[in-house]
Image (cartoon, rainbow over all chains, first blue to last red):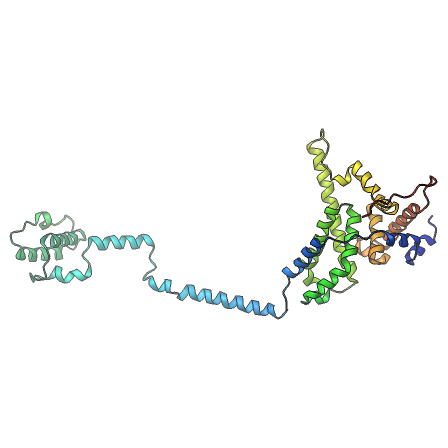
Length: 164
Length: 187
């Protein structure tokens, strides 16, 4: 079918066909293409195999430091409770309507020196009423009247219904 | 390649210098388009770099490199075929969008710019052309060509035999007395 020596002669490597092919021009890739490929190999290559475990150890160390910073960091220390923001806002507005702790000495004192202005004192009594602390409000009202006997207390003397 | 796999970055430069010419010519003469050949050339080296950790020195490095190149060209021809079919389907009335090198006038111009041998090489069926290029550019044996192209040894041998028979004809003197092969520019 085929001349038996065609392929054998060619495979010996010195056929006229091979010689002619080698005489043809031999194009090579452009320099820009060379640079791209060589850059590609450098860009993704780890320079030394010793760097791989070091890089791994560094990333583990950073991760642990990050977790510790989140758990024990200064941001966490500032927060006194884990209550949601809505609850904290409610507590804040409650503090505005209720007498604050540092004013209790003045509130429960009958000493006229510690007594505040009548309007301020009445506002505190009203706050006690709103909080349902009527017994304290009554006691405070009595002290108020002894301090300011002529001052009208209005409806603060009336206990709301359903409260002790 | 083993040195490169194991972290010697300079070994890549040696590999590249040794194989860039044969690989480029293999791709250029397979796809017959300089732009496509440059893209494929970069793609082949990219795949080599990306898969270097999995490289095992079981055979000659050239068989590994040209197996990647073979797969890249197969992908290229498949994409090209799909693109042409889609173009035909979308607009049967208008002229389909085919690469310049595949248009009849482009092919004629391409053929005029090269020697009779390279023109005959370009006219070969792709598989026969590949077998010839693999042997000429890399010195691969028939067994190695079979491995690179994923065919049996007899198939590879048959492809190479047909290729050299057709190419030898291009070396014969032209039938018209005084006619010379056109060699204005070769690629």
